[in-house]
Amino acid sequence: MFIYLKTMLEIIILFLSVILSAILVDRFRLNEKLLQLLLAFSGAYLLTVAFTHIIPNIFKGNTINYLGYFVLLGFLIQLFIEYLSGGAEHGHGHCDDDHDKHNPEHSSVRISPYALLIGISIHAFFEGIPFANQFHNHAHLSHTLLVGIVIHKIPIAVILMSLFLNTNSNKVKNYFLITLFALAAPLGALLGGYIGVILNVDIENFYKIIMAILVGIFLHVSTTILFESNTTHKFNLLKLIIIFIGILVAILTNLL
Image 1 (cartoon, rainbow, N blue to C red):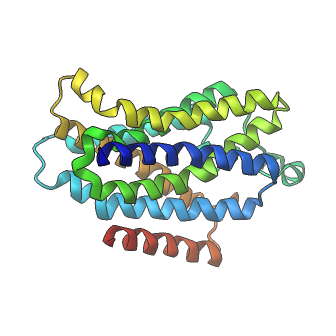
Image 2 (cartoon, rainbow, N blue to C red; image 1 turned 90 degrees about the horizontal axis):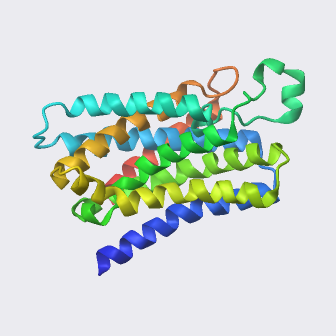
């Protein structure tokens, strides 16, 4: 019973992190610099979790000969997701209108909102799978992963809602699209374990494969965030400090 309640709580948190962020950006225009700092923090956090916790966990006592190839697969999946989403998951496509008027080369790339929704939802679905009930034996990882994903979802939701608002479409439609995105990770959590059963894969090996794919996704997203730190591709001192804070928080979270 406790495992089911814990899973439901995680699902609710994953869902609300998107919805509340969308409401926030609908009510208030968030500062671009603040959003970039939050992205830098999330990138540093995810990269640290991947190297210090997920990778050692899935490769420890590994019985899958080609697990590294699934890390590569995750990296390639994220490349495809970025093609659909226009890079919204690491800050592309969200920019200040006044800044764009004076710097046309930095203006947002026009992409289909439906392609954007599909791409970012695939990304979120993979992120939700590790929270499936069937993976409760790895509960020591779930709280660290949950924090990282929620921190990462906030700027993504802000970017998505900002793009939807800029299309001047109906507000009901905007919230409907955001809700679809918000449901992607919970859907991954609800269906994740059953996918392994349908595919007739050992549940432990299936978990390791999914986590390896997720590591590949994290590596792509986090390194892109850190190296494409802003429109000039230069680090500033504040962003560098935020990155180190993100690393430190991830390490401390691992120890809890």
